Image (cartoon, rainbow, N blue to C red; front, side):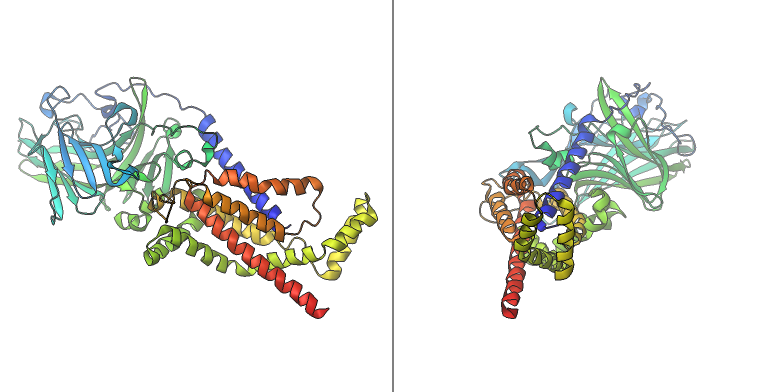
Length: 561
């Protein structure tokens, strides 16, 4: 099999895979609608009841007592600004209802409008909630109204840490403080729920943290939408535990496969393309992870939560429940230092075992050259060096097949339509000249998993989002605005076809091969520039290698003659 045929097979497999993924998105079976919760708001109804130990299944909360603070009480938003985040905390429940990622603008030219991950608008609803529940004592859940010391906080220049405290008090003497701690340069927010029992009775209950959201709005449709990373990327919940490792819970599985697991040292998260949020309980805390599908006036909302162990506080005593909340980009190089397995939120699927090392190499090359485009070029050269011997065998086989083309054409003319004799004569010729016509297949088959893995790395790595290369390419995650790279790749394909033998190819196949450069030009016009850059450099180095090997073999034949 020659290189052009191998490329065609790879392209067809690649397109079929993308179409299948999009088919699954567009025509999956719609999930069953959960019944509306019985008590409180829909989000509140999904919080497990606490009765001694962590509840095994979701149960509605009893309506909050008046002292716990209800939605009817006045509440306000507290703004918090650090060097990387701008947040809004609702004093009702102390929930994080808005989170702007200041270093990630929606569009490269519009730095005034950063990506908003948490959002309390109906169409993009995504919030982080927390609270306490108790079976027989007052407890401030995420509906209780807290009091803030001030309405806004800003991390001042040179200041390394910012603390925001919200306070709730019950007439019985129970006081609960929610203390959020923000650090410079960090997307990790520490939450401490401090319980001071000033009542005459022991207090017993559980702390919980949860994420509630609607699915992200679908990006605009276009006729090649299965190439759109926003559509291909996984959107839904995920969780991690030392026993079962990384697990995904798509939105359409919330009703049929709800999460219910006891985990020590794990996390729960909501993922989307490039960004995510995750609640991370203390490493030694035994939590129960759960999920729920909610109906808010006809709008589906999805919830994942971590319910902590039972806390018992004697009269006059105190206790603290702590957790961390990550709100930010999927920066693979630093996520595992936040929590074990957190880098797995960048979902490469079955290609993870190859994609993660490729991303690691790409990140280190970027540290060396400080340009993601140059890092991609260096990665291509490293991959070509790793597969040099396989590629050499492939091109040598192609050069030998090209040399045999006149003799094979003569056999075709001699045997005409007698295909059996034709094939027998060709096999004898291959054996005599020690040529294996299938020698070009193995290198291509070995490299296909690498190509797929690198496709995911370049499509899903937030580091390449809006990353400039040079000149007209100012965003490697977007298509080439002037189609220069797709045109270059078309020229590379034409050069490849010129060097590739067409032995054994019927006229129909030959016509298809001639059309393929145009087909690929259209395809790559919609690919991210970073991915197209990879294929241009990869194809160009292959052409140079193939030309050199072909010339070397031809020169050797002339010398022997």
